[in-house]
Length: 237
Image 1 (spheres, rainbow, N blue to C red):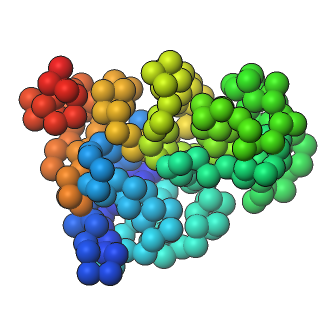
Image 2 (image 1 turned 60 degrees about the horizontal axis):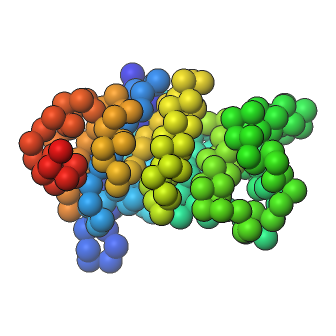
């Protein structure tokens, strides 16, 4: 049984159809990538999964349970969370306060303290800045904080929406190294990413979205070697 099943999902914004009957699966232990150009429906897919937009039809099934119309806060409690495009950290709060808010649904105070220590092991730079106001962090540090805050909810499935957006090449590499480490520690990942080359290099399988429809799917390696994908998303490499 797949950890996440998206079945024939249709999403509209007014009269504009953003998703046109898309279906895909994420199995436990995988990194699955959604790639596509701006406006292809990637972020709409993530929002529909997390209950941030409501599909007109179709189903989202997580861990065997239909969650299509479940409130986002309840979805997080069930073990799925998302790092939104653009980070959306709490700018006026400290790094530590942001992390504590990531664990808002948990009641295990001592374990939360231990998990913050684990986050600082994964992100040493954040420990150095734990009392710093989050809005004063660099772009890369803010992205790390956003990922770290999401991990504080102890998700079984982590959704990452454009984690490398706006970062320098060095920081892009660092973010993807962190994604691999999170995966190695046992978290399943659904990744939306415009940097198709990086995404396909680390994913188990991938889906190509074009104007709200899935037009191609395969392993990361298969899509990296697909002529259409090379031409459209990999700069002809």
